[in-house]
Amino acid sequence: VHMDRYSLCRYFMQNQGVTVMEQLKQIRIAKAKQFLRYTSCSIEEVGRMCGYNSASYFGKLFREETGRSPYDYRKQHSC
Image (tube, rainbow, N blue to C red; front, top):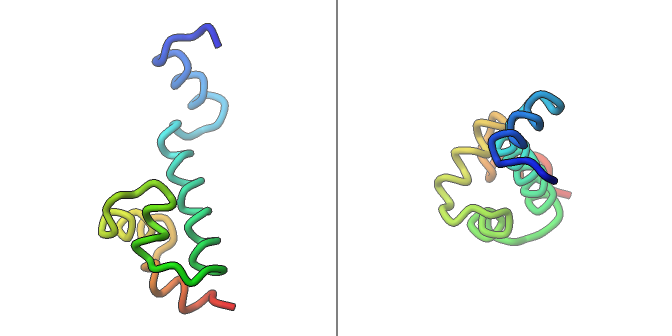
């Protein structure tokens, strides 16, 4: 893209209103919500499939984004 890393991150922030890492976190959590709703994978597996090696860290970020734990989200939204 003919930009250094700093310029690209600044450009992304100016045009998207969030950092690259924040956008990535939002995409991962959205995918985790789908897995929690439509699969029977364990919460730890869902976290790993979404790029989180630590189940506790995944739970912490999920709770920050959604206001509830992955377990509570699954219980509330399961089909």
